[in-house]
Amino acid sequence: MATEREITESVDLCRPDGRLDPAAVGWTRRPLHRGNLRGWGRRKRWEYWGVVTPEHIVGIVASTLDYAGVHGIYVLDRETGEETTRDAVVPFGRGAVLGERSGEGVNSVRGGGVDIELSNDASGTVIEARATGVRVSVRAELPPGHESLGVVVPWSPRRFQYTVKDVGRPASGTLTLGAREYVFDDAFAVLDHGRGKWPYAISWNWAAGYQPGLGIQFGGKWTEGTGSTENALLVDGRVHKISDELRWDYDRENWLRPWRISGERVEAEFRPFHTRTAKTDLLVLANDVHQCFGTFHGRARTDEGRWLDLDGAVGWAEETRNRW
Image (cartoon, rainbow, N blue to C red; front, top):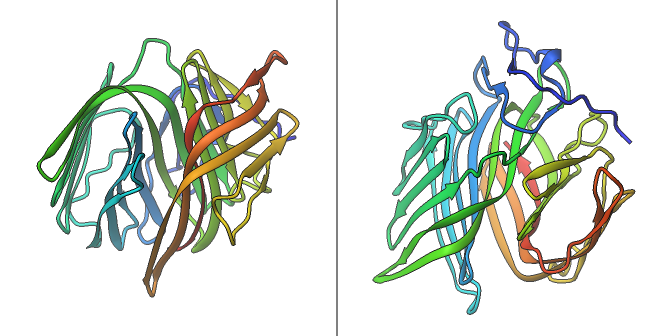
């Protein structure tokens, strides 16, 4: 089991020379890091929002990899399995405005037919995303006292990542597909905020899910050997940090078979009902994503040692392989 330090005061991610500040390594219950990245070429900055409504699952990504902006809007109809996908690759990330602090100010990207604006204030985030034939307008509330998991993953002084995983934000809004508008006020949203300097080739697992009062956040592969993990439960708005690496067992030949995620405090099974596959191969930039949507089952243990039932939490589990 890793021994992780909880950070309780604001800290810069980087030293003035652009290297990782050792004082930034640890985890937080609310965003306290300033992602003051320096240099060019290995910086990765993104905002990803997943929104789960009774009828749809929506994914929105605004990102820049320095040499390219990669943006997208994805919509899954939960009943029919129909997918709507709008992707854009913008040379050198032109037009991307992605700030240094999670949950503050306005993040926006525009290009390739995709327009995304994420406006933050103390009470929540307004998500606006538009492309041909699709429009998303959502408000993700930030309830008083709500906690999120922030983690710095240190591969080396020159390669590191700061991530905020914020699960179970109450969400409401509209989704427009073609001429049809869907209105919802009983959804939840998940934020993945990332700022860092990554190795060229890397793989990861990520799982997130929610049911009223319980959020699930599990990660794998990319944190191994760093002393940091991105594993936690969110119970009634409070983070319960899980510091051991979890074991992931799934079938790469059949993504719809149950996934098993386990550890000293986790005995989880994830049962997919749909798989999204996304592949990009642009020579320097390539990725292979298998994101499965489904339900969680099993149990996980809180900081106090109480086992909680995960059955019925809705969300996703994914494998991503990147060359970037």
